[in-house]
Image (cartoon, rainbow, N blue to C red; front, top):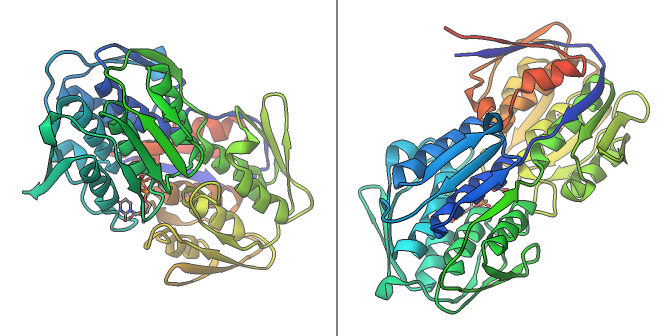
Length: 423
Ligand code: UD1
């Protein structure tokens, strides 16, 4: 298995191009199941998670062609399709569950494997299934598969109150409701930019959706959706990750394609930590204002709050900040697995339940470390940028799920980083 080797201590300077959002693309791709006509995504990220979704959609009968080295994906799903999403593919990636709503809307029937446990927490699917049940689906769990059937072969509109603003459940219900009979209202919907991106694409396909980006989304079902071409929104998590690179390593980096509205809560914390973030014509430019960044407390929340997907990277920064910070993880119950690895690099972190207390040290020390999940792996790379000596991050397949060409992007701004192919 490949590893990434970073030699710390080089300040960064230059530009990094931010890709299209993984989490947006993973919700946009299943939208092909809602139409007989082609859906083309531009600005798609080149990631292994996208390949997994491609594999899943192909197994259901979609035709997918990829152009411009994967940046443009055209999907077409016509005629009769397979309605079973197999465990062998679904288990690789939780976002596979996003085919449930579209399949049910199209065919009135779907069998989708439960994604199973995930390293960062239990992540059940009750919010998705309760919502679909309200729309008239009967859902049964048999042999690890959800068997879902719409009464009378067609979902019907409903008022659905989410107990928690789940991103995936909002996407699944929103897609299912586009072809349902009547009006669906989702209360306490997730407000993430990826939801707005999906709604925008669905509208391009002919869907009638209002209120995306707020807590109440209203979808008026239509008889059919057409094709569309849609550019994937900028990846705010990749953006936030690279914004932290010059804060940790020193120097100045301009993130091309970056937008303040995508990372407002995160940028506010950077400001409090003594970091300058300025909007430029092309994106966002980031540099420390003075020497070391200062400690700052962070609590993860659904959008527009501080994203859980930037918590591990923020922790890497706080490990070298001046003072003591408290990080509270409110979205997932087991998302501090990077902490013991950062401690191996000389960080001072204490974890109690969902709270981590980080006391900054002047300099961390390179060490061999293990990536435990996607965001954890990139936090170890960020930490390595400022550590003394060499950091070897092993098990980087997690990284390739969500970051394209990380070593190329960071070495282009002056980092000493390389990929070492595994055996
Ligand atoms: C999405 C993102 C992921 C991000 C997360 C939270 C994608 C592909 N993934 O994941 O990167 O970390 O949002 O911002 O977009 N929950 C339930 N029951 C459910 C659904 C969720 O209890 O039916 C709980 C989960 O266990 C978790 C919390 O709700 O504790 C958040 O989950 P959710 O917002 O659904 O995240 P995902 O859509 O899985």
